[in-house]
Length: 396
Image 1 (cartoon, helix red, strand yellow):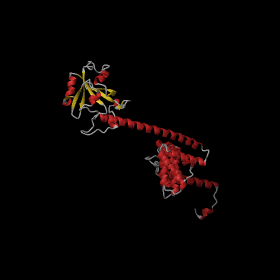
Image 2 (cartoon, one colour; image 1 turned 120 degrees about the vertical axis):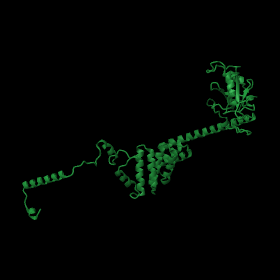
Image 3 (cartoon, helix red, strand yellow; image 1 turned 90 degrees about the horizontal axis):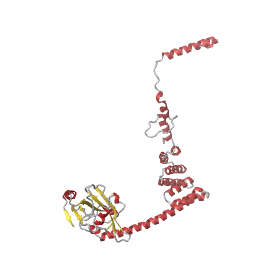
Image 4 (cartoon, rainbow, N blue to C red; image 1 turned 180 degrees about the vertical axis):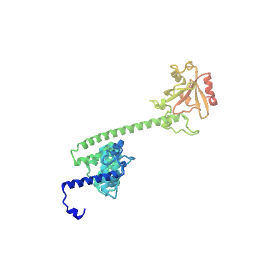
């Protein structure tokens, strides 16, 4: 527009005409632009998903392994970059994260956040006290009482008058049966606030629990002493009888332990050998195997004074369920025991007592129990049993 046009006075009609002309020129310019589809937006079928990823609209924080929006990464860098924040600011940022996770009961994530805050190396004792106390609370809610107590005590180190940390320490000490620590913490709380109801209640509970624990410990100590005395008597009785065991080394004296005497047969495991009430007779667990049926009977408490005849009488008081031919009856069976060390079997005389049988040179207690094999006499079953692995027959 030249100087003459600038000085010209425009009528309303001329102004409207010029405006229409400019609009037409702009429309013509836009129509002349290359037509192409806009591809920078969110896909229609995934707009909600994309919105949830955007830091301005997301409803929950990204989890480890999630794809993170570039803007979120930028915000994170601003929040956690040591070059952009002081140590105190970093620590407080992580504290805010931890408090967020605590509010949503994600206590393990809270522990992680408070730990990162502590690692920021703030030298502000108030900030450190809060971080340790909050991490103590997170540990407490997932029952990590030892870690919770340690953190509460660290919080008190930085802030000795921290009531919340002292109360948390008292609670953890109670859970851990640290009765003296609990008492100390409760009494210190009551020195500051004589009307601290929770501290009074916990102090009383702690006292009662301590008395009960000490009483139980005394009972356990007395019972342990009685068990030791009983076991010593049992061991003396076994050694006096010169009883031998399967896993005993040749020529070596057996090391009598509770593990050695614990029966390895499931139906007998709660009935190890023991002395009777008079302390004069050994009571043995025993297994009676029937090779024909791959089946065993168990007798949990056989006095060593019982004869093999007594044992068979009990075994055959009722017919064996699998004995369709009724071959297993008194007077129609033979009983054997095996000497695995010598790879031979021994026939048992029915009139002999268990103590006499156990005392035989070839008898070894096997798996914490007496083990016998029962077969019908003078039958194919007996012959196959004796021929197994070509074991020689030995008569005691």
